[in-house]
Length: 276
Image (cartoon, rainbow, N blue to C red; front, top):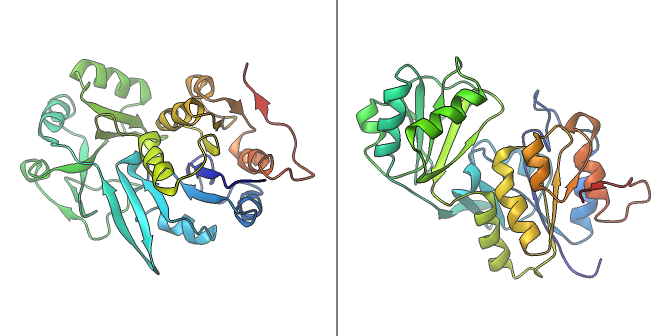
């Protein structure tokens, strides 16, 4: 390989399985790509608190990490990290529309500082250092994200809710369990990676991104637009595969490792299916 690649990897359903164990072969494949001189980073819907662990476990050394579906980009400063870029919006209108339709749901917001305010316990979310507040206080300051957790609703319910509520001034993603994650309008993993790409001065087409969710479509489209690669996991929904340039195996079968090995021409690397 003659030039460094920027490699942006989703976490849930890409790097790890649902039980939070690594997908087969991922640590070794990541190490091969990193040791070949490439910049391997994470681009996830998780907050920084829930992401740093995977940066450490995979022994990644990037200068930047994308979190909160692109609303937060962290930058390494010596042995610590700073919130390098944080996208904010006024959550008042969004919260009013949602609470009118889902009054029993639990809500959480993330402030510019990273602190989380929540109205009730939010399963599977890191609330360390957070504070339980009223709905009025929840919307009193600009936020980088609004999370809605309503276990009685499925993905289709959330899609209908977004349409019915007219949430066209924000970006949103639906998690692989029952939550709706709302970000500032026009912000996604792709917009954050584009900023990182520019800051690092990476050659235009030397980008490789991989993911399995609808919140990965933005980074797929950005990577393909500049001549890079976009790989969907085998278990991804049809519209996610459609947005990608390539499809690899399921996360349970080590799909990410197979795709990463094509970057370094590993002798055992099988072909990843390219879309027409």
